[in-house]
Image (cartoon, rainbow, N blue to C red; front, side):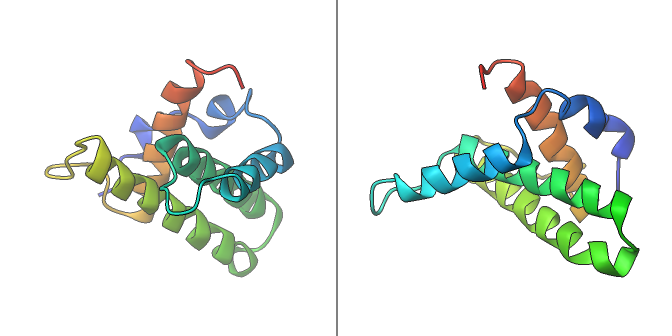
Length: 122
């Protein structure tokens, strides 16, 4: 069951976000400079999910649904990865959760990014 109304507006959430190119460069830097055998942290998974959500939003606004479908699927997969990370590392419980569908997971990313970005100096 999707609860999109609980998610902040993506335009508002991502208004102050670094450019998509800057975020992709940050993600690549995190992968390249991560010590071998160490796990990526929550910031990585959150920022990856957020940038892929932003790309999907742009694709939907620009292209026909069949063309945008891959971007949406990729954004949903990244959002699910963040949810899985939070379940494993932060104690997030999915029991009785609104995080069920791909849209729910993307809404979760927006809520979490909104909260996270208020505490960051990007």
